Length: 495
Image (cartoon, rainbow, N blue to C red; front, side):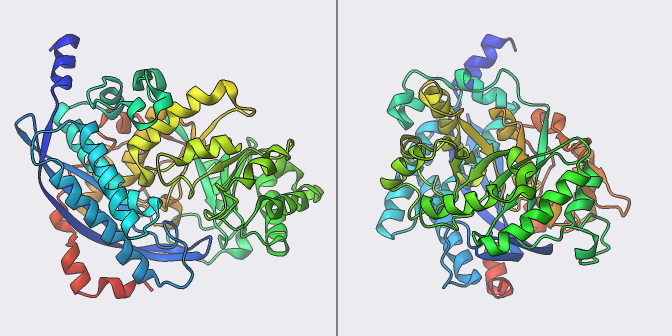
């Protein structure tokens, strides 16, 4: 079929949804992942299967997500079980809306608008925060997009640039009227992306800190740098100078003595500050410490220092404007709805993070907005790539496919660090992952697939060639149906 024929085929793409199913694979971390107020040791990895009919042909779309508590909502008083139950409620509600919105043939963008608007109304009535509500929207987006890419036998970046999905950026945000995805996205997806290694609040740094896992993978920061030749890092802080400063000194020493090719870093405030004055005082304490100079000289950005309840308030504008020599700051947890990034840019923030769990269409609109606003911004716009303990393979590969299409050169990847490769899957599944994604995965000496990080980056050749990142044929029947998992007490294993 010639290019014109392909385009005509794409432009006719409509679909219906016949059924949506959920399955669970419980996962356990290699060692605790401390972020913000949480310390993750286990979580359910949720698979979403959408049975679709695309232009008269049946196809299955798939998406997945690890349901990490204390990120979508940060309520100290709730249990992990309550947090996951809340996540499942918004996901199941989004599934109900998604299925109802596609009873008759519909195009992707119109379906997404109906889904996003109705989920937002539902969440508003129940006082659910947009960040949590849009987890449900995002999973439905990704599963349907996977099905459309499979039906078109076309990689994600090509389908996006073809305009077959009918995404009208001007309908998402008025100031984007007349801007097409082809104008926003790079001509070609990235062939490699640098791994930005997470340094959690409790991560072991040097040999003397090692928990002695002996599971075949590096378990300290220094060993990870040597094993993967890492050059990019995401460092989490708790917001208490008496705790953060000694630890940051240790981290800086490890980075400066172990990174053979130098390093760049980002600092994640994880909403630990209630106002910018408090964060500025904290940052000034960092700058006053000469041992931290190598870290601050190589700092790329500060991620979400202010709690989401304060981050987008009016007084932030004057505080940012009055801090002319401060670091570039972006929002992350505050980026819950399509209205949030415009608000943040108006206040003086430099940008936002892309996380697939926050939404695909919203992420594309964010990239477009930063491109449009760039000439009038005081600082270069920032669209970073962040992670949520994403082991995958479906969620991680789909996430990298969109990161690659957006042209984000370094992305937080922590799933391979906090989890033991794909060892939690069956031997047959592991073999398929290695077969379908050579160069991205490698067979570890102990037999399981693990991320193949070379010179600090991963090869995306197989990711960019797959319909939506993941080429592995997956039968979800090998996992536990959600209802069965709940009835068998799966929720009780989270605490």
